[in-house]
Amino acid sequence: MIYYQRRVGEKRVRFSLETADWNEAAAARELYEEQSGIDRPLPAPIVESPSFAEVAGRYLLEDTAHLAATTSSRSCTASARGRRPTRWSSPRTTTGAPGSG
Image (cartoon, rainbow, N blue to C red; front, side, top):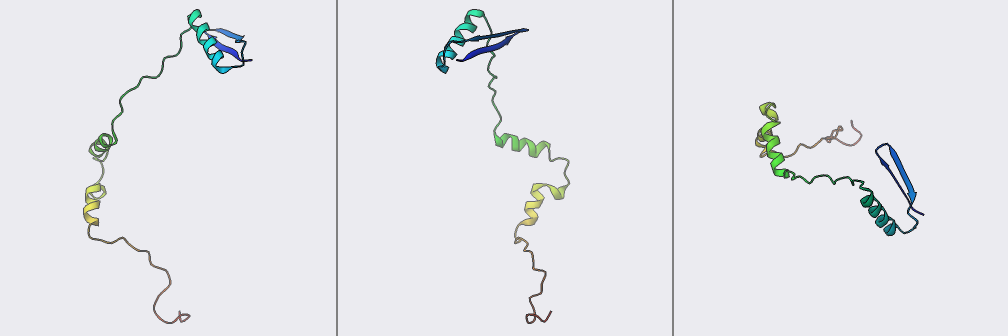
């Protein structure tokens, strides 16, 4: 059996829907709430969200103004042009015969 249970104000309402089928129970619940005048919660409103491009542009204009010139994306990009990525070198030397260290 599937039971209906809900709080309406301070009152707790609970009773059997006299079925084991979830579709029948949902229909019985809707009928009971409609006849009893119980308000169903409203769905959350759908609002338009800004695109990533709009948010990124706003971020670059507003939230990076306090950064020093050397940390801005424009100066980092300009100074990195034409340079190859740095390679980490091994701590051992590559000159001389093996074991002569």
